[in-house]
Image (cartoon, rainbow over all chains, first blue to last red; front, side, top):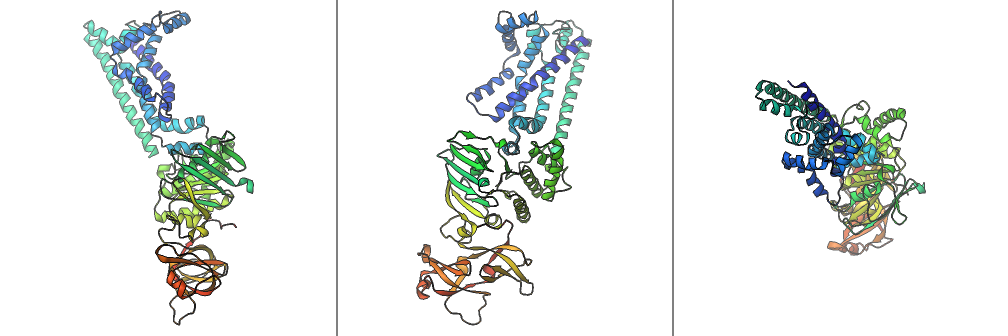
Length: 222
Length: 370
């Protein structure tokens, strides 16, 4: 069992969720409540990571992360290290590929709030910001929770993009799923089996938690 | 008082055509009545600032909420409206008290709970403060919505089909509840409805809307006697609407005596003495006579003077107004009857009204102010 890889996977998952939830809340809310030119195109763009092969995604991400690109150069000047094949780069890649997993469920959750409820909140004297925090976010919470858990689970399991963008640096970019692949290549079926079982347990636990939490929320609201 | 009157002017060609202009005084309840798609709800939403027509002037509570020409637009959360939505629109994640307190965010935290409790008590929901909307019945939800609307001490009360989602039995109860709340707030109220009973029981004035245009705007009694207004009087035809007080309830005869401005009229029904009621006499159920035969079954023989005789309308029916004391009673008779009885202004006649022809509903609203 590669505990170091387990730690990398865990912190990658947590960082991804932490960075994506505010982004998803904002984007999901905008997409759910406003109409603007180019909205359909934007919605399609959000779904791109779902459709592209991980290698293609990885290729483009590496291109953007390279010190020859603006983003890569900026990061290197600020951090003194390359974005490619680094943990921050991995987090950034993970945030990007998980965009649809976060934005879409949150958008649906915001869309499910009846227009009258929003209007009633406005007529109660709540400012747009207060409406968002006190009414919309709590009502969209089940959808948001699903998005968070899905993203976390998806990040733990991601393989292709991680391998392309992060490589296989122990303690930096070697996640559990990469470690499994690594062990299999070395004919170490035993270690690979243990790690696979750990991921399986995490996946099942995630699913059960989501179901239980959602059920409780739904029961409370009728 | 006058500066707290609600002034509304709305105008636009599309997508929802609007050509509306009216005022509503404090204490008045204006019912906006009309077929679906006539723009009733749009008018209400425009007052609240939830909809922005091309041209709008809304003044309420001494403030200007919108004035297109002057470039004024106050967003909905800064307008002091109490809005009761058709489907309640309660916040499902908050308790009844939480729903009401949500309308009190401009008050100090310490005051909110007490004020929310007081508002719930006003709609007789004490003891249900900690229930969530899904644990309440339809009628109870509507009362929470009502409590939430009155919590802010609104400058205008807006009610959008407030009884549409509840059944008949609950409806009566809610109408009384709305009327009681209405009395506690000395503000203009606008009620959107397509139910004649709501109009008769709650409104002081009616605005008839069709295709976004005002077809008629007058007091309830004035509009009810007009034969030319489709929609409003479709069901029962034109008639006379007047307010009265139950003078006596005669259990034995199964009738109530109603004291009105001009005498006493007997109607079938039951009500406690002292109850204020609104009565409606269909014009086609009023018989006119110049002399009376013996042995009449009819309970009411009202003697009065013809005030106007309208030109013949559809089916040769003629509307004849008879002044009985302060009440002007409308009678629908044939052109032939007008000729035979020589009905003309100034002629003394007897108006015969059967007790069972009179619709009586306990008046829920504040009386019309003249």
